[in-house]
View (cartoon, rainbow, N blue to C red):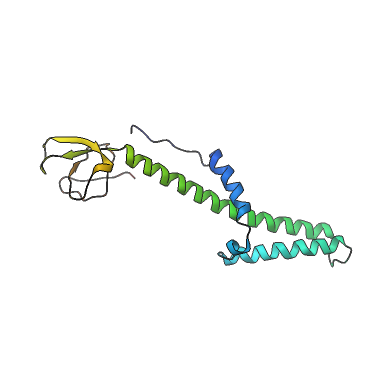
Length: 156
């Protein structure tokens, strides 16, 4: 691994899936998980029904006014779903990237636990508990562990 690939905040694949998921999350069961947005969701449904009633001529407010209130409420619910779906999509993409990096990452496994010892370059996936690795400046850390000699400053 020589560098990192930075994905844009508005990665097209994640964005497309987030738009689809924002509509999929419009089920009452899904909305009930967030009480505040559930209230907005119920309000959206009720104002939509009031708008239909106003179209029939029996509304207590002008139809255009109820329509725009309903539109803004639906927009609020969809935007909240979209933001949640974007966060989930980016989280999944990062987890997949970390899994891939773990497969591709190489480690310098020391043959003996001392400074200056010879090492073998092995796949990080082949490391086992208790094995000692050498991590030098600008190396990727191949696995969780404890610093046993020297100092560590890690840029995550």
